[in-house]
Image 1 (tube, one colour):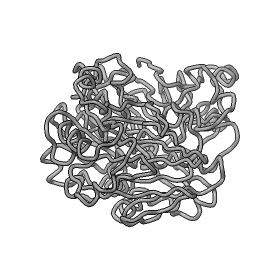
Image 2 (cartoon, rainbow over the protein chains, first blue to last red):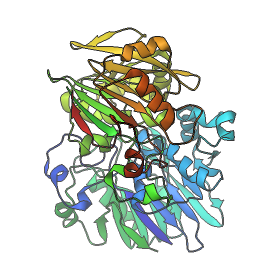
Image 3 (cartoon, rainbow over the protein chains, first blue to last red):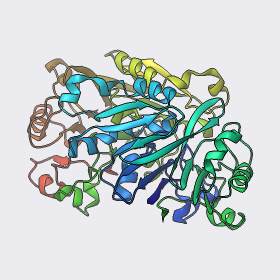
Length: 255
Length: 255
């Protein structure tokens, strides 16, 4: 199974518009962060996306990805959903519908934000993304022979989903996770989890909290994502405990 | 007055995801088109944006624009509005609200799509873009001493606005314009207008229709924008009548 981190940045991306800080001025490509999203391709060729970030088109082009079987959504915040319209480029080309999976709140909110995709006239002319929304519960689902385990996390007061696929798990925008849900993360080869910044934040793990989760879960490797410009890649990466690294845009690994 | 074309592409942008056509494969930077948007800076330093395209953040970074006084919206389709959340990067930095101007339908639709910006708790913490929506009618408005004349156009069945500022006018996504509204375009130095592609399209002018409008209005220069991958820059540009050119991302001119 191949995983590509399409975006490792927080909701604003890095650099932040107008910011002159060390990270935003850095010429290190690892300090250029699009909004959080990941691509997963199984050995059987099933192509899954986690979140259609607002940078979705750029991410598809940069990584030469031109088809998807399904999208798994973590939650409905705009940095995670606002690129959805560009799925149209795929649904037009392949003349097909794409299945979108998310918890109930996410589907409800997305149906409001993208209310035009239900216009039958526009569907007929394929001038909207052709998508099927599926509400998923906190129980295993199967998409084209791939078993996917939702992992319920709290993002402040909002219930959101991370996902485990085989021995890979991806969690973003999490600020708390119950012991029961943590059990789903046992025996991982790779955990991707959010680590916003150095200082604490009410609705996202900071660096220290993410390190603690990684130490509890004990995956073989951990990558931190959803990073703000407080995180200068080389400087912070070198301070992390063994087997924990910062993710960056374009990071690709096989599991 | 300075104008920068931030995006000259149709709703999908160019290249289209997965497309191998001559334009999408072109290495000419003028064939790389972000979604349609323009920046206007008056001699007195008033900074106006037309539409917060889905590529808004990228466009601000590329063109080193870090502040705005107001946004004028043409209409509510997602390619023209979906980058609005990234205004937050400006409203946080400058601790201010940004005024958004649009016709009634656009404001109504944007208030649904961006319903979270009215959450008072989030406004208090500046974690949403701080924006004031203003419904404008088809009559002159003044923003910080800049006189702006809306120009009502039809985008299929939808009434949308183009804008005239001094002797510059910007019209996108137009498929028809009345004789009365065309009169507002007399005496222009520069007209930017949409010209989707070669073939006709039900809701956008094609190349021939845009040429006809330009010939009627007789501006000193005309630039075509909102271009699909049917338009290979160098090939098509060389066929255009005198004083008509294709726009491209980053095109800058003074009026």
